[in-house]
Image 1 (cartoon, rainbow, N blue to C red):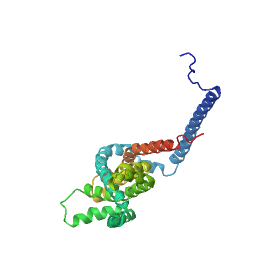
Image 2: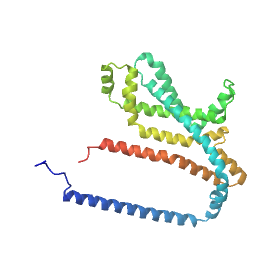
Image 3: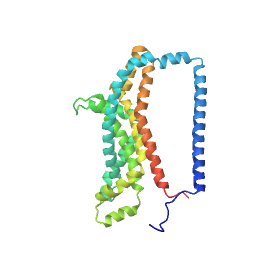
Image 4: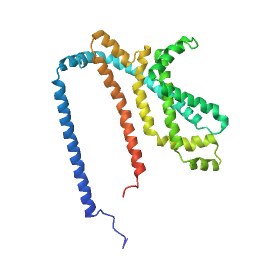
Length: 286
């Protein structure tokens, strides 16, 4: 079309800025890689030259024992994964229910708010280990429920503990939603329940995604505590192999497997937090 403006092209100044940023980025990566290599080399030299390194290497990093114990520990890890799967579902449901109970308005809902407050205060105040003992040994002693595997009671205990933490995180996110959102929803004819379900909870959940995922990463680690109830998970399998070999390498194998299990969640949490920070800062740079 005659007279139409040509497509935009960056100026020479902008191109120079881009080249400078690229050079600075490459330089930063090279410096970071070099410093990491130097630090790793210094730590390695100090470690292998320590007086007790040979004994530690034999007791904690025995490749033959680690290879032999790997199948049993991997089988036990599958139990941890199953317990984590059901615990995540239970925590998501119970934590959301508690958060909603604590956000109910009006004096008629005071009993529910009080129950949710007492619950969160109690289970956030007790160590997970004590809750596991109380649930895993106390409830079966009542003879109310049929005999269940130790892993089931351990999963219930983990769910009870972490639902209290998740409920408080969700409640904080819901309270961070501006009151005008509630007022606008009610003015459109939505009930209190519909306002929570369609307006408040979705907005509050987006505000607290990183801390929520951190709680679930922490729960993935604490699922290993179900071994104290007798469940043969990764930690218990490692303990059995340690008792049979008088060597601590199986514990190292179990630790590496737990790290491999948690790394995807950790990296996903970092990625989501970075995306949310970029979204909040969008348009704020000059």
